[in-house]
Length: 193
Image (cartoon, rainbow, N blue to C red; front, side):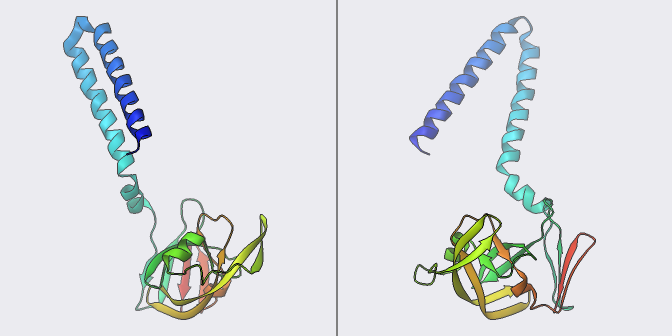
């Protein structure tokens, strides 16, 4: 924790102590009932803290996941709560979450994802340009040694690293065309090879 965090924590503890003191002074006539109400509010507060702390785990449980049926050569992905489809690919044995973008031509990595999969500064040289909805952006063409989606492995896959700000990497049609069947039906994206 930083000094600012300790200061914020001290402020919150002091504020909480003042509120509790005021609460007890106001309700000193019925102290037993006040203690019961205080215990209920304390449990509610702890419950909220626990829910916030466990939100990442809860979201992973509730969030739809991709289903790989390797014997049938099929991958099914449910539509996310935001209306997009997301796929997690293993790039050089590192999981990378992509938003499926049928309007994009290529696979486009964020700079953070490019670094995570092992692309260094020597590999990422921004000398090409792409046109986006926000205007032109510089890109760096790269080759990915191994890209896996479930049981399907592709080698020496062409991709681009975007110099601009992106929240997620994009999976465009150049990669999706490697599948024999691409279907969006009933809230599910289906890929087959």
